[in-house]
Image (cartoon, rainbow, N blue to C red; front, side, top):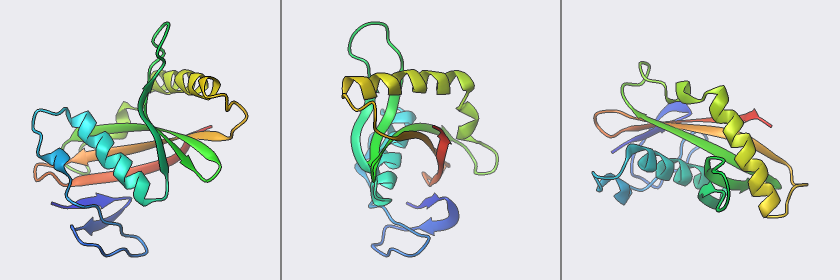
Amino acid sequence: MFFVWEKPVILKGTKKLGKTSMTLPIFSFFCRKDEPIGKKGEQVAAEYLKKKGYRILEMNYKNPKGKQLGEIDIVTRKGKDIVFVEVKTRRGTPGKAFPEDNLTPGKLHKLEKIAAHFLQSHRIQGTSYHFDAVTVLFDEKKTATIRHFEHIFT
């Protein structure tokens, strides 16, 4: 099983870390065939972000009361910043399928609302924050192509 991200670097299940390459162990999320592809993509994205030095604070954050504002796939901290991460996952062929096509203005507006709720409910409104997107594309061989778009908006 291979993982590819950011640059066309193929990563195998080794422990080698290089300048532009990172590796992930073979995870059990590939064993559950009944699990939705979106959840698999979120797990791959979370592990990828951890390897890049992000600290995962919450997964699948929703406001617990009142009108549902939406969901943030991953809430992380990188340095002093809170980073709200939207994960988009698809099956397909690299170069022909683009998960980022599903990042619509409507979705970004919802992210902004739920992020404001997160900051308020955790009483950290003064903390600097921004939004990232991670896309995961699984091909027929279960190779995951991962792309990280930083600071898609602030």
